[in-house]
Image (cartoon, rainbow, N blue to C red; front, side):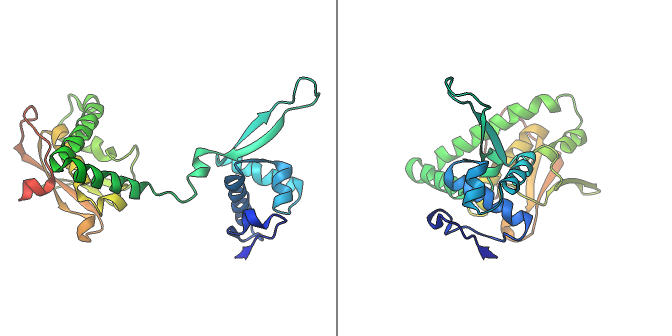
Length: 245
């Protein structure tokens, strides 16, 4: 890894990349666009000390990968000529830079609990559960229990490749090997109660989490207790700690 040498050392003094590789050069282009808020091909070429054509090719590839967007700047009416292309980071490109969504979420959970109390936190999580139930219910209507469980493999996201269903003599289990909320859930397990409650409401039977990431199991396993139906009309959100106490 080498530090980028540039005429404007103030802007890039914290940018480190391997300029001998294509990936490293594109990383430098992304870093420049992030720091400068966008730029022309000529700006990038001069700033990173590469040829105009080299900068253009890197931007073309980044645009193809949907990491940057090209925006046309049309000249004033009194000036003839073609529009100038200015490049900026796309939402996907900006997402490559450090974010602290997890910390903010933990802080929000703590603030609600500290300022308003656990009952209000449960109301908020219960409302989140209801919202998810309303989203999923139409997709599951008229389905058998096994069919509903199979569809709920995507409860964390469409096409989730890490959630699987196991059916054996002991019943049905939903197994998640990649919790998308791991950083928050590991610190505030109450968030996981939303998934458990959502599954129970949608399946109409009791669901328990018998393995969990927080316990070091490396996965979460939701056991579907088909022989323990629940009255979904009277169902009330509860924290997992309440149901196991």
